[in-house]
Amino acid sequence: MDISSDVWNQVALEASQLYFTEDGKSPFANTSIEKLPDKVILHIFSYLSHLEICRMATVCRRWRTIAYNTQLWKNVSLRPEVSGLHVGSLESLLQLISVRFGPSLRYIELPIELITHTVLHELSSKCPNLTHMLLDFSTAMQLHDFSEMQAFPAKLRYMCICLSEVIFMEGFMRKIYNFINGLEVLHLIGTYEKGEEEEEEIYEVINVHKLKSATPNLRVINLYGINFIDDSHIDAFSSNCIQLECLAVNYCNKVVGSTLKALLARSKQLKCLLMNGTNLKSEYVMQAEWDKCSVQELDISGTDLSSECLIDLLTRIPTLRFLSAGQINGFNDSVLKAWMEGGNPKSLIALDLDSSDNVSDEGLARFITRYGAQLQACVLSGMTHITDQLWMTILPILTNIRIVVMGTTERLSGNIHVDQLMDTIGSHCSKLERLELRWDPENLRFSDKSQKAIDLLRVKCLKLRCLVLSDGRYYETVKANFERADRTTVVRTTTSCRVSAYHVLSNYNDLVFN
Image 1 (cartoon, one colour):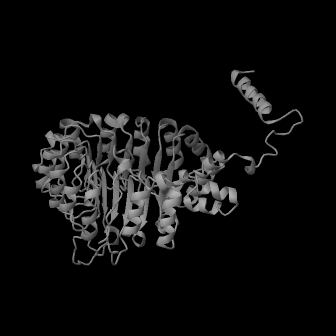
Image 2 (tube, one colour; image 1 turned 60 degrees about the vertical axis):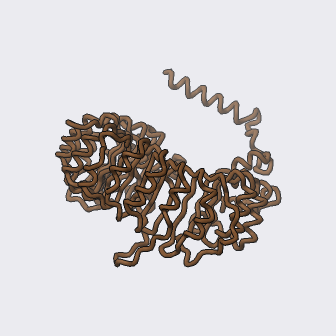
Image 3 (cartoon, helix red, strand yellow; image 1 turned 120 degrees about the vertical axis):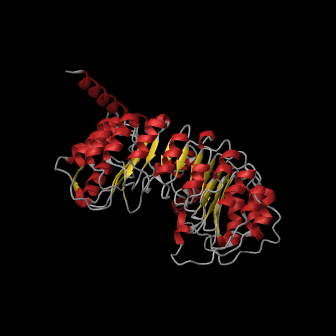
């Protein structure tokens, strides 16, 4: 008998001794959930959503008492479309704040109908440990009257404001300026996703120039999809927020980069700069002193920067850990070659070149052969010429990879042999956490023995938390395999989930909103 057989026999013996008595019955046979102590049920409830906890409260008086324990109500969303929780009246909310939330509350999300001066007064007096708040004004057609507001939570470190398209916020903001000077993270979320193609009048619904004076301690600023944000607003924040570490202006299409030079000169601690979907001008980007900056994480995806500008930028920036440069026509093999020869990609851990069609598979193979072993995230999706052949070549090099996105939704002339891909990933990428295959299901070819490759991926990549596939036969096969192993939340479809390299950003947790 070999050693492995001895081990399994020992495990079987211990299991029989642990779970069965001499009469062959389990010592837990007569145990029910009613016999569990309150603290155990409380711990079980902590894994449930608040909507589910509310349902548990209707089971019996004991469970109701446990469900209303303030420890379960530290992070609360009262936006029905997000959490499913709906508070019918202000009186009910005021009672909840006093009785159920209290000093335990750390984070709260409020929809427009619940944002009143009375509610904010109550949060200020009854929830002294409240540090994170989201105020959703996005559906507002008018604001409540805040003229009598005299108090506001004063220990906030994180605040997210979802802006309305037409409601001016200055009356409300003027009342809270004296309470928010301790803010470290600020999110202003615009209405980018609601935008129409027709040109409409643009309103500056919040006064950024006044806001920056009230928030000198900001480390992270996220201005997302706001149609009035331009370079002057970036300049305003950089002139006052000397501790700024991360600035995100994704989908603020009025940003052209004219104040980049001043931003980099003032913000010596700025390490993360995200400008996806802006209208950056090459001449402004080239004027900035990248060789003297501290930026390590850069997103310039969806911009019209020229190849000359990209070469100038990548060969001057001292240390780059994260680069997202997808959907840029100017990003080509000459840019990659210049970066390798004259730049410093030795610290790079994340590369996102989604839909950068002018980069060849040969150019990518050369780059990743040299630097792939250090990469933690690699996104090479949206390109029809990047097929399983390139991935089969580079996957054995990506030994430290955590995030991989491959494939395109466009129908390919050839087919993708997905069994070989899964086998290679399972054999070489044991640290993988997130994987997305965007290929059309009609292009995926797999055999009757594909379960073996899926098993290898599941068993070897134990850290895998998210596997995204296009809906189809192969998706159903993979999903069933993981569900049989009780890993029911891993496999998802591209219609409901998308993998991003943003997970490796140093400020990722601070940047998450909604």
